[in-house]
Image 1 (cartoon, rainbow, N blue to C red):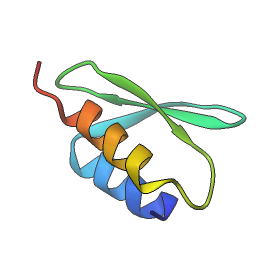
Image 2: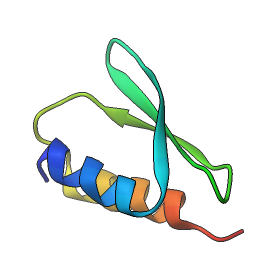
Image 3: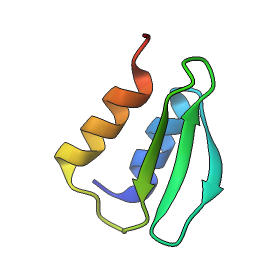
Image 4: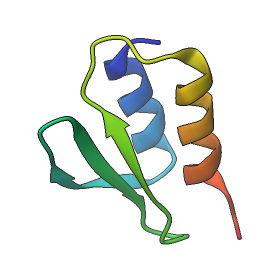
Length: 60
């Protein structure tokens, strides 16, 4: 999955960028408080991308 596609899906979930890192950016879902790192690669493994989306969209 392209990184920009993953970021757009993350932002649709209501997540915001907390900080930039050297190899990862940190995103947080403001409604659930869940925080996940997102790699700064052009291509992100599909399974990893789905895992990031699932964890950020959890309504726990």
